Image (cartoon, rainbow over all chains, first blue to last red; front, side, top):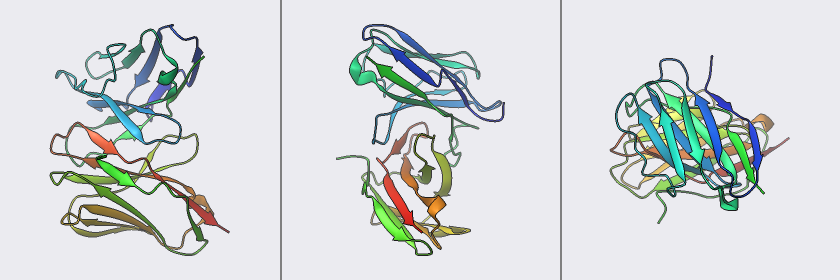
Length: 115
Length: 111
């Protein structure tokens, strides 16, 4: 596709359930990022993938959060045993490579609401 | 101390005026700086990037970087109501893989 694609666009689930969010980056983009944005807040870095290198997981807030990416394709972010504080918009971004001057291109996000 | 600080606003300017948005960062090793525009309910889109001290102009937008004072600003000339959005400042440090975002400044351009 032309841009970064995320699904679902909205997800409402009960506290304690597991959720899986999907990101399909721009074709050829080797770098992929996940962010969390709470209402009225800035972007909080979660995790970064670059090609086949080990991901930078330093932003994941707890062990309930995990993410996977196979090669340079789709990534999934999984949140286990969801809590109300997990309610936020989860944004995925991709860039061409890890060069410092490469901008990030964002998807439309997944709005997650935990009841 | 936050990595990147922005005044949350809202900043209100009349149509046709210059809007000035400011951002400060805490780590001197920061290398690249980006301004993103985010409309309500939408994802951020890149407006400007700057890597060297001084000014960089692109149409109605000018980014200014002062590494000695650790601030970066965005000027929007001839502001239009369509410029009304939240503007996010982002900083990339020595390790290329982590961007730090400010909480954003909300800009309102009044017709």
